[in-house]
Image 1 (cartoon, helix red, strand yellow):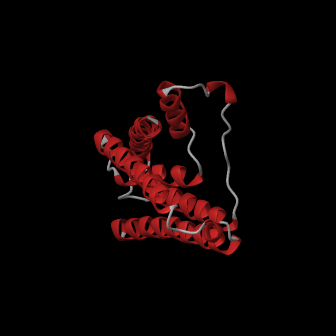
Image 2 (image 1 turned 60 degrees about the horizontal axis):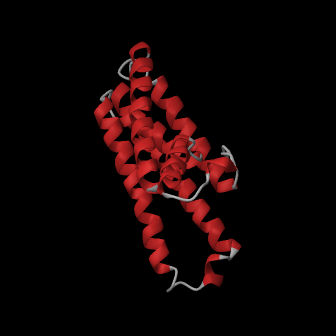
Length: 169
């Protein structure tokens, strides 16, 4: 239920981000200047750097939402989806840039991203019996994971800049 709520929220955010980006894109078409794409790419690169440094921003949700039952898990998943963390914001920015002004494509990309985020906890939860608990508590491994995630976002931003340079040139 939690993952379903988050999937719906991220699909909606993917569509909304695509609509907003296509509206703004009317005033700054990428074929002429590409500034909007470059700004979005630089935003993703900055977020990647923040993740590598261990920084970020969080939106806190009150404790009164948590009750027993599947409805509260759905609501909590939905709220977690509409209050995304730094990597989600970067991915939603990327989705808005590559959806090519198609709202349904943005919704689909957001939903597929949410499905991917639902698979990881399921897989990691299964592997928790195999992987020793002490291994996951080491600061060096956690820092390495942060660096890998940050580098991936920086590469997404770099790919977007490369796309813009090829489009404008």
